[in-house]
Amino acid sequence: MGNLFLREKENWFAWSIWGVVGALATFYVAMSTQAEHFIAASAIGVLVLLTWWMQQSRRFDFGRAFKICCYVLLFTVLPSFVLVVIPSDDLNRFDLIFQSIAFLTASLLVCLVCSWIARRPKQYY
Image (cartoon, rainbow, N blue to C red; front, side, top):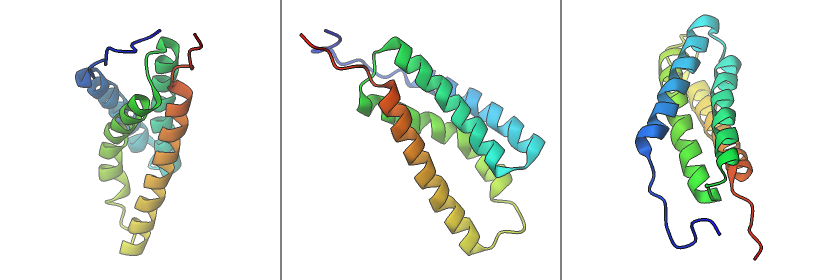
């Protein structure tokens, strides 16, 4: 029956560790390649690993999985986005705003898909 009456408390330290490990991996890829699509691929790779783990444990509903995915993705992408993408000299203000909006939209879409995959299946009684 799952945790029908018991709400699990979030272990934000564990999710922060996931985010820091993802940030280190993404930052390494960012400094090695300087290509935005590789940065995004490494961040999505970390999120896919997290989604696979959440789906295997079957303890996460959609809202909780979405909250965790967004939190981990924010930690994972923020250092490389701030240190590699923004300081690029060939961007003007419009390009930066457009890339930020496109990145935010793609991140929300990826988090929605990963949360949908990670949610626990419905239980029939």
